[in-house]
Image: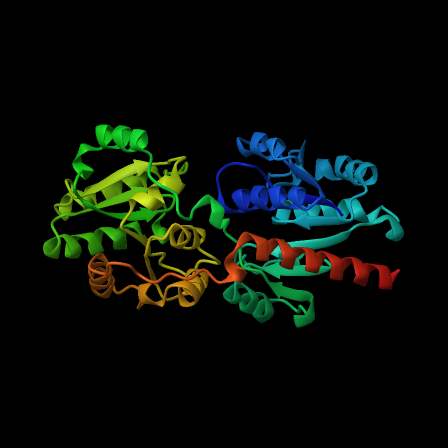
Amino acid sequence: MRILQALPALYSGGVERGTVEFASDLVKRGHESFVVSKGGPMAEQLRGQGSTHIFMPIHRKSPASFAQILPMRKLLLELKPDIVHVRSRMPAWIIHLALKSIPTDQRPAVVSTFHGMYSVTPYSAIMTRADHLIAVSQCVRDYILENYPVPEGKLTVIQRGVDLNAFWQRELSPQWLQRWFRQYPQLADQKIIMMPGRISRWKGQMDFLAMMAKLVRHRPDCHGIIVGGAEPGKERFLEQLEKERARLDLTDKVSFLGQRNDMTTLYLLADVVCHMSTKPEPFGRTVTEALASGTPVVGYNRGGAAETLQACFRAGLVTPDNTNEFAETVLRLLDTEAPIIDIPYRFQLEAQTESTLQVYEQALERRKNQQ
């Protein structure tokens, strides 16, 4: 098949990483893989794995983006993809309008993925206009069915898969460790409690600080690391976090590491990874990646992240917003020699690719029958 994925850009987010990993798997299986976006650092990785990246500024949530309708129409006519997979709302609008002036028998099948619980508006409803919809978790599926008139047969849940080979049974490089402890000497001989995620109020960093204050009273050898950068406009919240860290007397017990490009190594380094989002997340990629590394994860029992823990590591589930229970669970896991972690096949990259290809085949068959 010839497959075109469309998304705003290729920076470092979960949607972008998932797109690149999926594209790589498509190429390995002999399909032709194309991605259209405004580009970004991950475009080079995409090309290196055998996909074709097409630059087009389809990222702006403004009327100016509709200037890309004609260029998109031209691209679709030249490329003649079998499938167009839209992963964001503005690209979905541009593609939908570009297809309107293309004869029906020349149109590709369109598949959309709901990567989140989008606001219920006419703008978001464009994602339901595809031939088939994918939800990244059961809670996203339920949200779609509650808010949009989508037939259940047109909607499939496909969890975002993790490439186990990229995480499992790896070893920490002595050279990396040497650089690490030279940069962060305060972490030597400490139990590392990691909180990954961009700096944002709903990601739960405030809860993490409250939990660490309780934890270090029982285990002074614990050190928390908050891994993730502050996006533009979130710098003030980072300052609030730093003030709260000082107020809780955690300055020597919690470090802010900022944005990192060595997450696979940090998962191995950590003794426990925390997921503390204050509202339901659609999936929670860091949960699956950490578990795939063999590192236990503790998380609130809500949203897509909880679905992963329920399937892979029930010992890490905690009552939402209960930082006391959270600290107790972390303490228990630190004393557990070999936590039992199981990654079911449906959470692996191979399963995601196979299930998505099945959706593509169904969408193509449905479109053929409609012509």
